[in-house]
Length: 94
Image (cartoon, rainbow, N blue to C red; front, side):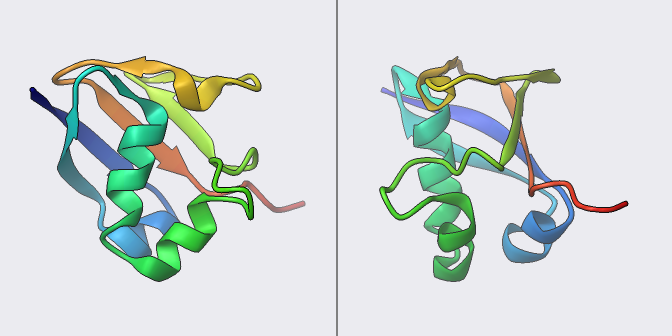
C-alpha cells in the first residue's frame, strides 16, 4: 500500500526540487524512503541529499510535522500518510 507524504523544501533544496509537493512511498515508510523519492526527481539533488555511502547526509536538516528529527538512526524515523517532511540544506553563515 502506498501513502502520500507532503514535502516542503527550503533554500537550495527548493531550487532543486520545488517548494511544496507530495511523494508516494510504500508503507511502512521512513524518512529515507521520502528522501529517496524526492531525490529521484533530480539526479544533481540526490548528490546533495546523500553521502557517499548512500545515507542521508548528517548535515541535512529534517523535520517531520514541524519537529526536528536527529540522531544516528534518523533516516529510519517512521512517517505516516499525510505527514509533512521538511528538508533544509546545511545552515551556513556568520
